[in-house]
Image (cartoon, rainbow, N blue to C red; front, side, top):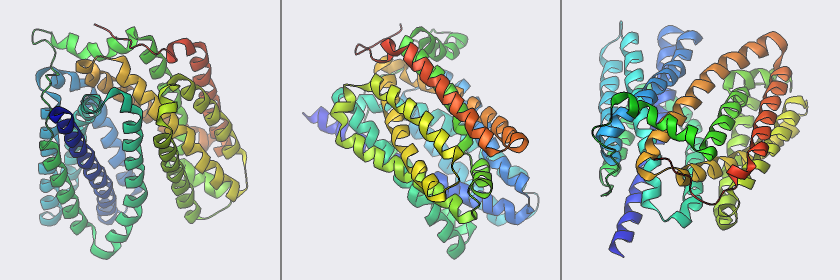
Length: 409
């Protein structure tokens, strides 16, 4: 009984720590973009922030198995958050003290912070199944997703308001406090299980292990292939393409760009609440949930891309969030059930690398298609990619609907 209560408390620390870190991450990006724009006046320099974030996380994900092999997951999570907090302190001091030649150091610190986050993310995701009962995984994953959406909904508008009221420098210090709070919560997690693999494993074997597990598991291989296709399709939702969509397809101003984004996150939040309420039903139908969700995304993406009615676009954006959330929770639960606990972090690091790489390529390709052929063509391409993902799910549905755990040794 005491062990169960201890796990509950540790999960709450993980949950609160993650919310603090997520809120800090958004405020951190808001501040950086503002500081860099004020210093350079260049959109190109601003666009380097997400580029360096993605590139560093990609490299970190490739190297994460070496760290996972050597240290326990809780230690990785705690010390990576400690490192992020220290680097943000350095960033705060750099932004205040140095007025000339600081841009290079800002980008360097961005890379280091994102690099550490690439270690923390798989460790954090892999800890969840060991801190909750297996029968409550769907409810727990939906709870975490709801929290993420709430943070997304409140952080961007609050960040913008605080930026105007207090200035970027003070918001950076607020972000430092949030990181520090997250570090304290992560440090309070009690996790006695040893998630390390064998010490005599070679570095190359360690780097390949997560990829091998994904390839050998029919469930994980199917989901990963779908993830690649869907990540390419989701490139249509980047800010630059949505901005063009609002102007050209809807003939509306910048405010509608914000409405579309807000509607999408509201749909995700509502979807999370539904999943939390009916978690027992979804628990018994994980594979079927992925199938109908992917089919729904095909229809909604096409209708959204083809409409010229602003209110319908807003409604379609809201609807898109519902199956997106259902599919994400179902996929996360299957992944957590399909790999052995001590190998789960390596699976997440490999999966994260795939998604970061696919999204980076998708952003460039979708941007080129929009510029060359128009924004409606981009949404037709995205619809086709979702259709391909649904075809993969349909052909492999017997693997997705498996109730037994597929493990790899």
